[in-house]
Image (cartoon, rainbow, N blue to C red; front, side, top):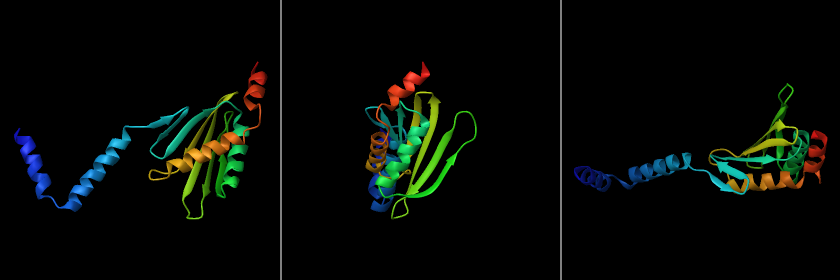
Length: 150
């Protein structure tokens, strides 16, 4: 009970600036433990993760087309060497905010796609980018990849 009175006294004696800082810290810490999920996409800490049933090369091409549709300027586009390629791309908008995309081939017919808008980035921007990537995947890509896997 004494703790509650001390906390109440502390909050009353603090200035609004300090109280606002504590509230902000609480909000940020609360967001560290939660993730927003709708459908197959998970958004957490500025990153939108999804799994796509397609070849990573098709997904890479779709991401380039999606960035072009949104008027994003390319910053870099790298592929890691090895049997299972991982594409890392970054694009800039007109305000120099960066949108990163990572595409990783998990199996012949499954790739993981992550859109990174930064910790304080826009979740709607990340979702729009993912929707645009999906829209540019070749028609029947999942059926073609599944047929090749058999």
